[in-house]
Length: 153
Image (cartoon, rainbow, N blue to C red):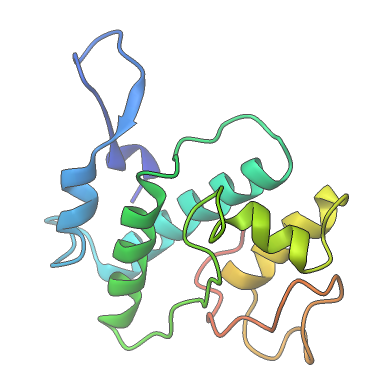
């Protein structure tokens, strides 16, 4: 499943792409026709990974905002839990604010280091269990419980 399927143009022609919240919400109940939970999980993982890395490195291409990233995170968690996969533990709920990724990285040793923030997101979302025994080398938190459904690279 391509992440583009999660977006639409409001006017169908020239308006910028926006997250189709209705589609994302529907993923919590079942995958779209012709798709499997693993395909949906991979698409949601890629979207979240790319957006959190983009935010943490001031890179271009961020497509989510503080209003809709929790919707995607909730759908991601539900889709992973359906086939009994353990979703990643994210100690943040948004990009900004007191429960945001920015606050998290500043209080966990990755302030001032874009590569450390990128590594932090990759570890939480992509590394298979046991890959980084004892936590992340940049002090970004504990090892991810996520099974590495997708390689971020």
